Length: 157
Image 1 (cartoon, helix red, strand yellow):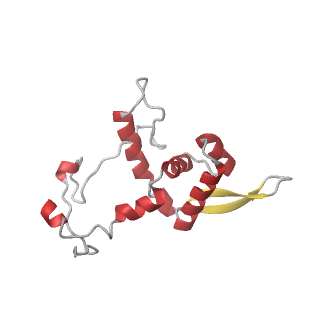
Image 2: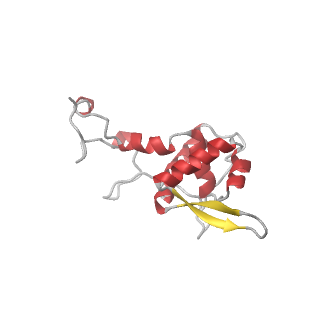
């Protein structure tokens, strides 16, 4: 597989393109808070403790990329402000954060246990993330997977 992989360039890599948008610590933590229901700039600041300029830049990038959208709101007697809500495209990143959470709980977790437990809203059972194929084989690990050139693959020069 490695020999064949070297026949193709990585310039058309979806992972690299995704990391251009979400591959920064504050961005992933901002998305974490958005998945937990946070929407307002000042709440993000309080939860994350990041500089205002950094948060503003990260929110702008997520809005520009289509992962979040701005919605105006106004508290009585206050100026109009923006809330930030995940779009469908943003919501589809949730499994990535769940995978990071589960890996972190397993390998980097606190001795007292996880800081957050994700459960199914409908029945209360703990959430699991399992890799499987379309034929129904699961769970799979990296050892069960092969990478092969897709229709967008480009031959190396």
